[in-house]
Length: 277
Image (cartoon, rainbow, N blue to C red; front, side, top):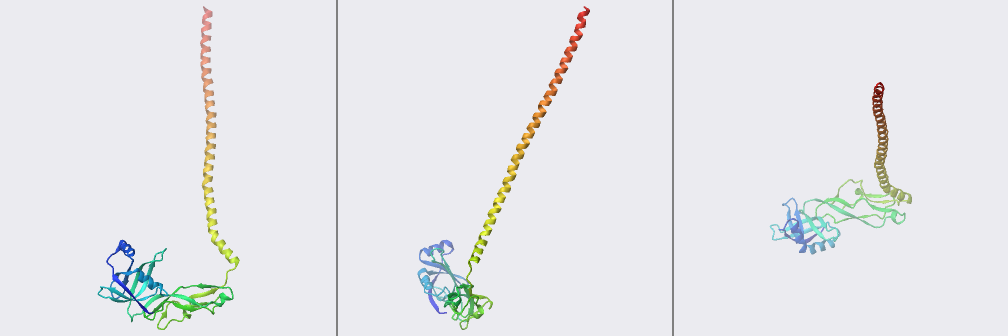
């Protein structure tokens, strides 16, 4: 990997407010870390960094970093991570990993394809990227920006595995050699697509039915409770009505009969007394 020049200055402003101010002035916050020194905050010119990325094959960059007014003005570093704005795509932050020329490092290298697979061109297959990046280890100058893989010979059902990819000289590709990187799959039939669509829709339908059942279960007890309450009220009212008249009817005649009998007895007692006179 060929190194490119990039200028930077030590960053004094920190926190979120400081980063916003930098971006408003056309600069980008950055940080550099490594084994040789403690992490250090930097700032870059936004235009310079964006042009560098734009003219590169990938964001795997080896830079000769010139830090202005620093005790270590020259640094060799790999671009470890670039953060972009989700909408505009502008660079928000950059992480640099300081390395030594004679130190082996490990990075993730993007994979791209060359040619058109036979299985796609003549058999109607589908080219699938199983892995978009492969882990590679080597000296900074030997590491590739990306790995190109020729897929023109692939037929349906065939794949290219990590162990089958030829690495650049001085570079080792890490990972299980049997893991597929690129494959050609058979085209899906209409039945398979319909089955997948049905599987995707099935959970939602089941959930809706379940919700309806739950609503019914909640509604039924309430309705039953209302009916039970109404029925109980009717029974109670009827029972109370039966008891009240009966009690009143029994009490009233009995009381009246007692009074009549007493009055009649008094009259009988008075009549004989009058006759004797």
